Length: 81
Length: 387
Image (cartoon, chains in turn orange, purple):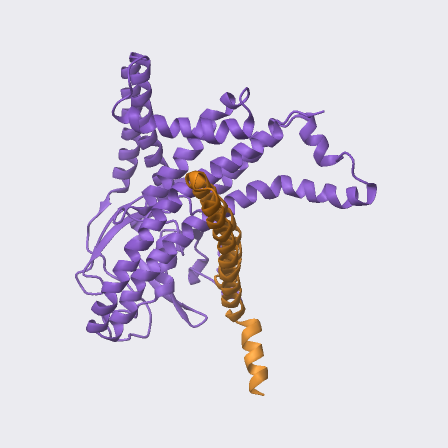
């Protein structure tokens, strides 16, 4: 009985929107983490290109964050009408 | 002669802006709450509602609100510039100051939550949108709690529009003065504002435009890319200045939608036959895959500017929300007790300053990413077939 009422609250309330925002944060974290990983590895292999690699890493991170923020906007739209 | 033209133009723009704002008149009078609710909680300070606070600060408004002294008490004083409201209904155009709205605030209970609205003559403003009054009841809601009044055509200069004009004035002042110096002594070493702008302009031309579009055709697009880049950058920075009324220019979907539409139009108009042929009948692709691929390609013509729009709006709005949330944290804890408020205040302010640095980086980065992607889309449209 309690399980049913919890399920009802999650599906019709705004709980799922908060869950979606959390999953978007996980997606952003994984994406930017992978970018940082490969950028640091390539900086270690070729230290003379550190400046170039850093600039490209930041650009790629901005693009990946854009996708995560897309999901945030959708979750916000669920909560606010 | 060039100097006379520039001065005259700027004075004209300034005069129009100032007269428009002066008509609206700076709002210094004491602001009484004329509340009609039956229930009187008997408390002077309303409970702090973080969600409403944040939404109110990131959305567009009809006034530029600087600060409020003695909030919640009898001697509340709002310091703000009320902007003119220009609306068109079937009777024609009406123009009045928004202070008429903001001086007559009425409370109402909608689906269990307290909201308020503003009323003036035949019009009612609810959540910064203007509607016509619905007869006796003034404001009516349908079953879902959404407002069901008739809406009017709202052409008023709101906070974001004034912010865009301020950005334009800053851009004109900075760049026209630097351009004049280039015209007067073309062969002298740059100094002053020239020295600040030259590396940035060369950066956009050499690192963004030429690699994406190609050396021969880049010059046609460099002025547009420069304008986009600096407009978005300065608009973002304007939104980050504290106490300036909290502009959220690039956070309004309308502004970024127009920018994205301009990119879409420019890409489509400059598309060569090679570009269109690759979208509608891609070469070297078997027929079953072509059936799936062509709709995806057609949708992507519109998706690319759409994603540009959402990326810019979401990044700027999210940054403002984070800064506001750290500020709200102080007030939420302050409601429990003054000591808790001060304690949280120290850490919260430090985090907020840190987030401000990140937001300054994001202001530049989002302008750069928008410009870079636009240059890449132009480059793809102008690509020569390589045989």
